[in-house]
Amino acid sequence: MVRKFVAAFALLLLVSGSAAAQSADDVIARSFAAQGGVEKLKAISAVRMSGRMTVGPGMEAPIVIEMKRPKLLRAEISVQGMAIVQVYDGTQGWMLNPMSGRTTAEPMPADMAKAMDDQADMDGPLMDYKAKGHTVELLGRELVGAADCFKLKLTQKDGSVTHFYFDATTFLTVKQESRRTMGGTDVETETIVSNWKSVDGLMFPFSIDSGQKGGPARQKMTIEKIDVNPVIDDARFRMPR
Image (cartoon, rainbow, N blue to C red; front, side, top):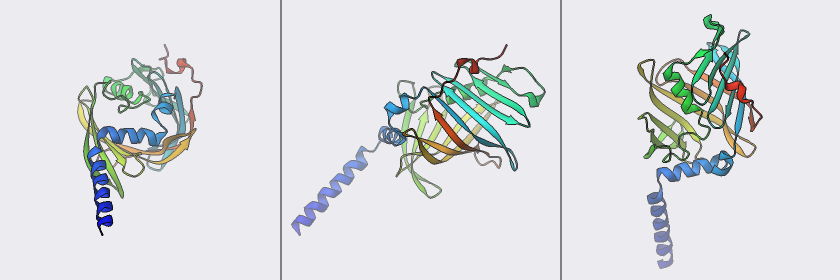
């Protein structure tokens, strides 16, 4: 009886200690470990993702997203034989949309460029978040569908807020919610990621569903192929003259 009591008491202390040690930094560290480890993540110099994205009810179009350090991002989608391009070159954003009647590249609106600047960070805002001037807070647990998740609040140095939901079992991201100003309007968006797969020893989500929170319009992307560290010419990110 005494032996059973001591064992149970030791287990209780162990569980209590683990709960007390749980913090935002713990969750972030476990998430990076689940994705393949900080060292491997930081060793990625470029990524190319190819797949399909919804562009209307019952309509899909091929899309290619290319990212390269330090902060280069290019997204190109082919619709009715025309290429719609959105790019961040590390300093400014530009776009080309022949479907709008414009046949030359033009600077991107400031709020869109700011959003692409955030997305162009290959490591994401949680990697070295303190050095970037951000703060993170663990808000507890919350269900996302059937998944029990840790909920983290990230406040970036510019004041924008993003909530991250990490699966409490796998520590992979399930959902993100962000609030930012777009076109002079305060907009809250959500992105649900799923179908995580291993590519070269790193975990990537192959299904991405995003849209305005509570809104009917959704944009779904299905990734079909991911190339890690492909050779990408910097010229692909430069705005054509």
